[in-house]
Image 1 (cartoon, rainbow, N blue to C red):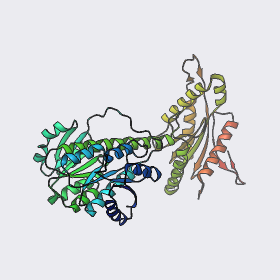
Image 2: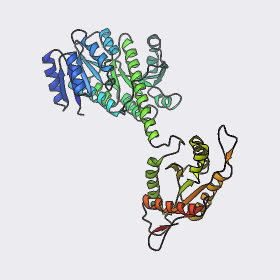
Image 3: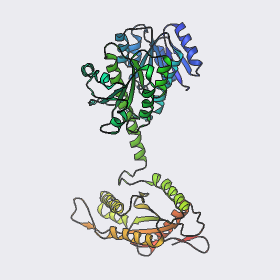
Length: 459
């Protein structure tokens, strides 16, 4: 996996050795020897990841991480610290600063590259949201954490120490019962797999299942080896989708710190993902009525036409337009006009089925498509829609008056003729001509479009 890496180390020989390792894997590497150089480089050529020496002079690691986390667009930039063998307390201090992981020298190429792939893949899979503000400081509820291992009794034995280290709610399972635990109840935000590196097959199969299961595919996953694992085993866990790996032993402080960091990142990812989904939903939704808009409706109609052609079943396409809507706006105001539109949409929506298409495609114009709907049925359905709008005058908020409203509908049938090859534009043109005919006949009418003898569309 290629990408841009910013390498920050005050010792030139360290940068040279690491650059060779990274360039051999086709990474593009830029270098800096000081925090100021690193920040200038990051601003001019934004990297995909930063690798820094844990021992930059003048508290450089802290200053650089703080600056990156405060810079828009770089707050989620993966940061990997390289350090000589260190104490657990020193490693925890780096994790608390905000580094994503700490790799100790001598570096193993397999483990190093697996961690780089893992961190870059996680960031690449996260949707980018243009202009999204930094997450607000809000109250974060305790997370549900699921801890699983070969031996449930040993895993449950972690409870007392973890209860002192973390505020999160913890559940336990063994690998045999883990699928059932995941499928029922509240989905976990984080899953910890306690793994014997000499018997990792079942754990790694479970890791793959976690990544594919809908309830856990976005959960933070931490693999904790019960003893030092081979670099190949660590690399395999990371490539299978573990967010991080660590070795157990000693106090559980590191586990607690890593869990807190992973849960924070997971929740940030969830917020970004939700923002993208909301944005996509807004792009295809009419904000006034909540119906789908033209951007959604036309591609959807094309799919419905293709399906109708494949099944050789008729498709009724209707264009509906409120009658004398300008007169309503002029008489009662645009706010009243909006009320009429909203109520119209409610009545129309109540009159169609889940397989039907209803969209607002213009000011007071609506597109309705009814699959598997022959001419006789289409006529009855269209007349029922007219009746539904006409049957009860519309009330207006704050006004002691009710407004009579009617709607005209033009209908075009796809598949109504042999060897139909009409496009979306053709079928809409036919429905539009039919709508014009309904207006011309006095409004509150239903007319059908048909091809004329000279090939022009008529009502």
